[in-house]
Length: 292
Image 1 (tube, one colour):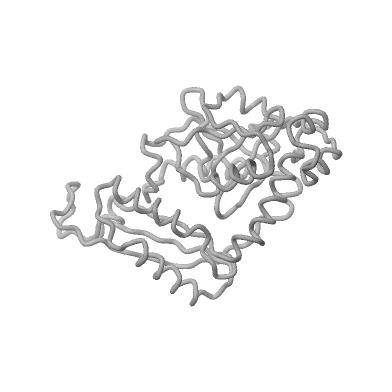
Image 2 (tube, rainbow, N blue to C red):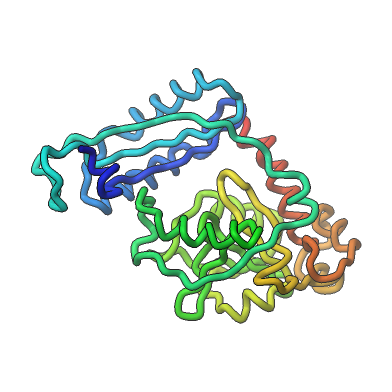
């Protein structure tokens, strides 16, 4: 009887692989180590050993672009018991899945989302396989025909049911602070790095629900969905900043961002800063992610 199956007593990690190069593998493996330490389970491998396993699986995968799923449970037990085994022997599972590019229509037209109270536990920084609450919350958006459920706790944004959430207001990219109420996303880090590299102002802080609903732009981001624009939340179109605000915040020498600024559009459409970020992300994917 495996505790991962019976109790969800397990942690996991998902590593995107492009052209058979695992992206930020060490960061993913350190996050796995954090999760294992947080649940009091000794890491069965060193970072180097994990990396060798991932590279071996990736080299044998059917696809050049794929993701590697890693799961570590607290192992078997003779009798069902909530208490940990005295000497657990972890069960380790790895497998590869095809990883496709984001849907071009979703990139072009954006996606819709619904919102919900964040009913999850207080250690969301642990990437635990016990994600029933996330599944219930994500299903709300599925039933509503939406792409994601945006979560709020005590009036503040935490994240999405299966993604990080970003807000754009007055030309500034807002991101919720990393803490125990959200997963420390790898793609979250990439977007903040790209913003800094291209001169887009960033403010990492607590973000109120009111600010989310009054956003000029709203994005979701994850390793598998990259970055997508949310153009409608709970049936209300997300607004968009215009040419003047964008030009004030991003330098005139920033061609990628300024070109998009001329495409003024009504609320409910992907915004100009999203268009710039999407371009930066795709260039980074080509120049960096596909080369290890």
